[in-house]
Length: 291
Image (cartoon, rainbow, N blue to C red; front, top):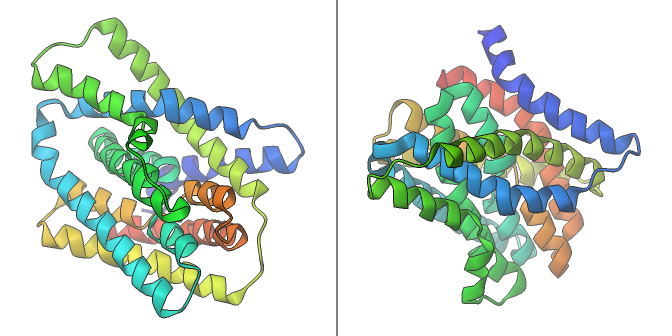
C-alpha cells in the first residue's frame, strides 16, 4: 500500500518541487506566459480530450456535474458564513476558502490514482470550477461582472467542440485528436511546474491563526466531498474524484485576484502555502481510505 501511494503522490509533488526549487535557485520561470499557454490552449485541449474519453458516457456524467455544482455552491456558502462569523475580510476569504486547486493538483492526482476515467471526471470538475472563478469569484473580488467575462473561460471552446462531435455522433479527425492529446499531455506537467514556481514566489505572513483557518478549509472540503457524494449515491471513481477535488488546497487563482484587487494578498498567499503543505499529509491519508 505504501509503495502504491508513493507511486500516485510522488509525481505530483516532485514535479511541483522542481518548479519550486527552480525559482528558489534564481532561475527565470515565465509564470505569466506559461499560465496563459495553459489556460488559453492547454486547458481547452485537456477538456476536449477528457470529454472525448468519456464519449457516450458524457450524458451519464450529468449527475457528477450536478454534484460538482452543489459542492462548489456548498463550499462558497460555508466560506461566506465562516468569513462573516469571524469578521474576516469577506471578499478575500470567501474567494480563497471556497476555491480548490482542482487543476494543478487535482487533475494529475486523479489521473494517477483513478486512471483515465478519474482524470476525465476531474477535468469536468475543473472546468466547472474555472467558470465559477472567472465569473462569481471575479465578481466577489472586483464587485463587477460582465457577460464578456465568460469569454475568458477558454475551456468553453473545448467543451463546445467535444459536445459537437459526441452529440452529433461524429468521429473527430485523427489529426485533431493527436494534436489535442499531445497538447493536453504537456499541460499537466506545466501546471505542476507552475504550481511550484508560484509557491516559491509567495510572500508569507507567519500566523498561527492562518494555520487554523487553513485546517478549517481542508476539513470543510473533505466534509462536503463526503456529504455530497453520499447524497448523490456515488460509488467508485465518481465518489473518489468528487471527494479528492473538493478537498484540494486553496487555488493559486485566488491569489491572482487578491493581488489584482488588493484583497488581503498576504493572507491568501499564506493560506495557499499552508493548505498545500497540509495536502502532503491529507492526500496520502485520503488515498489510503479511498483505494
